[in-house]
Image 1 (cartoon, helix red, strand yellow):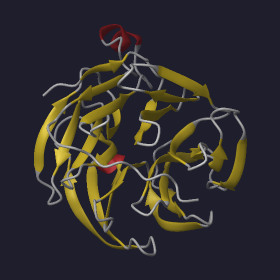
Image 2 (cartoon, rainbow, N blue to C red):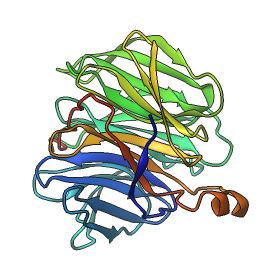
Image 3 (cartoon, one colour):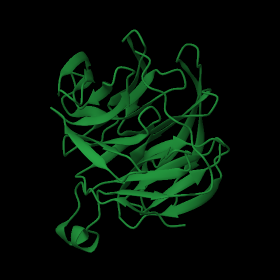
Image 4 (cartoon, rainbow, N blue to C red):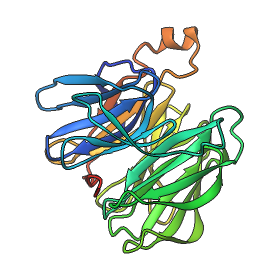
Length: 288
C-alpha cells in the first residue's frame, strides 16, 4: 500500500501529529518552521499558527491551549494569541539537547524525551509531566527520543532511541506513570531509523521510518506486519484520524535534505495519508 498526498504543505520539519476529536482536526508541528498546523480532512481546510520557538511535540488542553514541549522546555501555549507560559526548562545544564518526541499516556500525562542536536550522544532523558504540572524523570542515556506511544490498555509504553534502530517496550503503570522492565520489541531492517509512532485499536505500532520512505506496522510481539510506502525520504510521525479514525496520517520533513533530493521529491515536508483497513485510537488531551 502507498500513502498519497493529503496536504501539500511542504513543512521544513513536520512532526508530532495527533487527532483532536473535539474539533475534528488533525494537528501537528513544523518544528523548524516554528508553526502549529491544523487540518480538517472533511473540508480540506488547513491553517497554521506561528510559535515563538520550536515546538517539538505537544498535546491539546481542554481550554483550547496546548501543552507544548518547546526545544528549551515545557510550557502552556495559546495558538490563538501566541502567549507562552513556561512550566519548566529542559536540561538547562545541557545546551546541546532539546526536547524531541512525546505523547500523552492513556490517563493524560505527557511523556516526552530529548535529543542531543550536536553529536547524537546518549546524554538526554525522558520525562513525565502530570496533571499537577509536576515533572518526573523516567530514564536517561538517550541520544534521540522517538516512537513514544502506549498500548490500548495503557500498560505498555513503546519507545525508540533512533540511532540504535531498536524499538523497545516498557511495562508501564497507568496509575502512577512509572515504568518497569524493558524488553526488545524490534530492530529495523534496511534503510532508515525509527521516528514517531502511534498505536492502533488492535494494539499494533505504526512507526515512521526516517530516511526510509516508509511506515512499518509491528505487532505487540514485535512481528513486522506490513509496510506502507511513502513517496518522500523522511517520514517523521504517524496518527490515525478522520471522523471514523480510519485514516493513517503521516508527517514528513525537509530537514537536512539536499537541493537535489528536494528537486526530485518536491512534496517533502507535506502531509500524507492512507486507509490501511484498521482503526486507530485518539490521543487524550493533556490532563492538566
